Image 1 (cartoon, chains in turn green, yellow):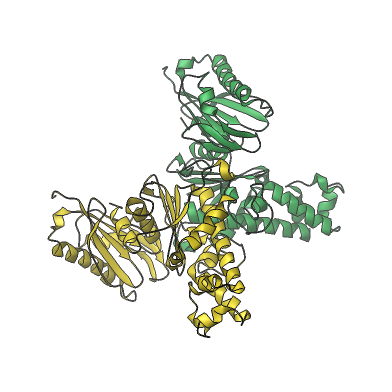
Image 2 (tube, one colour):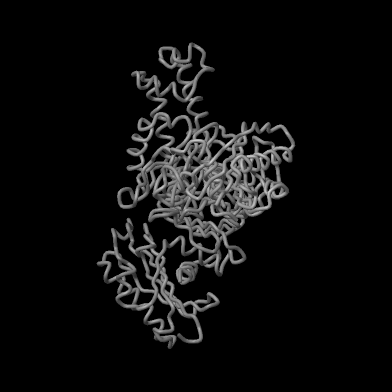
Length: 318
Length: 318
């Protein structure tokens, strides 16, 4: 092994495979990406993941022997112990031997965890939670990913299929969720849910400024429009935003009552709202967390590493 | 230190202080209890806890030097690191130095955790989850206590006020909860909630057999009556029981999706229903847990140690 400790981090996404070589200071020395093309056999995808790492090493003139390990953040239900992906809906994967396949190409320790877990670990090691060892991260996107770090290590539950924070009840029997249940946190607090609620409200209220901001076509709705319209004094949009804050505030309260972390981080496009999102959430949870001011109420902040969080976090699985 | 490893376990309850001396096989050699009398200054209660332990040692002819440590299961928001009780509503305690006070009387390691956590650890070490290292326990009583054991150790979250499983959302904005929020798991799945729902249903439906089983006075309602009446063919009671199973099934699903334990344990009077409670719950969560049969779905079972769980679990904090 050379003088430095090089680790590779791979963020396996539905669109792109992103990989980076990370140094001992959690800096990404070089990164690259290739399209995932999820319709391919898994063997081809995994081969491309390994090739991407080998290619980066080559470009950095780092030998394979200097690579101390490879970490992978994967979507789906991950069995960290066996390195198998038990199930990924988006990839159509069932029992895919991700780590064993990677080992065909790379002779070093290889570990895998859920992508949201890796993003949370990345933020703890080098991002918005750098001063702490305990964080809960919610990625607010198409769905909600939950990543939990306790004592500097990823919390995954005892078996594959834990830490699925988005798939816990907010309103039992409510909006249908992708997991088959009704009323999960994901069905109310994801970007998809915000857009659904904004479309419904705008559709019912032609006077809402959200309609104009969509160019008259609700299919153009996005997560920014309700915030913009609310900011512009639109009462209908304000209600949509207020409801969203309430859903998210209640969900965050649940996770504080379970994990009581140093900080709760949010990521995803809705974080562009910055303190317009986090200020009301911080005010909200002060009144809802168990034992209120008699226990520690963590601040709610936006994640700061963006796409790098997954790569850095994955590298820190090693 | 003698040949054997003796530990004391204390279960601090709202009515009684229970203590036991536990051997290396997690057998309680002797136990005793004294009334808590929560209205007293905390110093007196803690002194009685220590006296109870010393008295048991004396009766067993075990010297203080042979006691390797004392574990305490306490209600409320426990700071395991400092040994303080941050807050207990029932005791009217705020920032009570439980462990430091105990150390005045006993010169050995003393540790404290939440009472539900201790009960869960007791069941893992010597009870219904003995073959496993990962369990979630829900104590279904006046409220709901949540105890989580992962890798044989209590999960408490990063700071005092974690693992409060009862204070997570089931139906946001729903029934008022003792914690100040609305719609918590505790407000739907505790024994108190079952009794409330049974009283309401019986009150609205004079023909329900639950009324006769209450002797005509709904104040006599308990958690057994709706099950008895349902078993006797009463449709109103059946609906109450079905709803209760649904609430509990959804709550258990949430905790499986977070902790994915080897087993989910239930305790409290409602467990007298045995498989009439656990069979429908096991059937329910098969269809609701994330990734369904593609991940491991833990069995739901009743705890078996009863009051001993807290003492044995507390002793295992050492």
